[in-house]
Length: 237
Image (tube, rainbow, N blue to C red; front, top):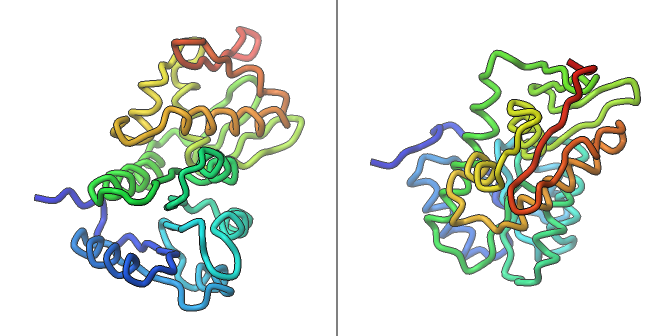
């Protein structure tokens, strides 16, 4: 029996290859996902606003503007999870997508089971973990809001993506202890076989860069060959 995360999830598939779009839509419909497409590729944000999807799947090479452009635009409006598809195999494409706030990346051609595994992992992570009744956490003099995906201290406030807040949450829960890369990857993406090790690195670096705005970037340390640690001195406890 198929394990469906939620039959009511709406997915926006931004893909201009009609044959591939219809194939993916038909396959996802078999998993009870409601899949929408784009009719006018110059009106992506307008259609995104109308549809209000729970997950966006987007190709890099699109008419009018590329997927990176629309990822930037979507991120300026929403923290909805974004999964990139691409036939391009240059490593900088994956790095760029993660830096822009994407949650994951799949290179074409891909096996449909991999796509389903990634979709389900993202949806479980984004829409289930917030059921934790502890929504606010104090860490190093900052308030971490797991519901609003923000970190705030006297220096200001930064908004994190779903991946970034989840990584921070995992590290804070085991503060002053090393959390292995394997544990983080397994928690974030469920099946590490489908994940590039560089994906985690890009997400952690992006998290650090945002925390730098609050003077907290250096508190997350890399332990070479082991993982990461979120430090908290006694004076902050």
